[in-house]
Length: 199
Image (cartoon, rainbow, N blue to C red):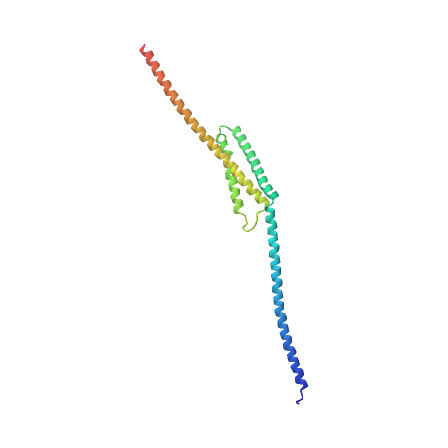
């Protein structure tokens, strides 16, 4: 039986231990990469969940009855009050200078500026919104106010046009009636003149 060399035996054991250690270190490095990836995924998922929960809460708030009432009623009141105040000012200016161009067009001036201004503000507000984000409550109220302000102005403008068109038709009918009456009076006048001349 050959005698083992103790030095060679120790060297073999050291080599085996080193290869085992290298394999363990490689395994640990791989496990660390897997764990790091899992932690990164969990952090990312947590951030996504937090963002989704914030968006869900914001959407729930935007769809609440209180928010809807605030935006709709607030915008409506501001639009109606501002329209009435401006119309009061327009009528006062028209009464102050009834013979001016403004005084003769008070009916149009109670609708046209409101329509143009309201429509302009509404389009600018909608165009300047950031895509992918919900507008603030203030922007929603401004949007609702400008939309209703434009609609009230358009309503006043169409009413003024309708009244003027109706007045012009009535004037045409009155003019036709006056011309017919004038023609009848002239005919009677000629008949009377002929009777007078005949005598």
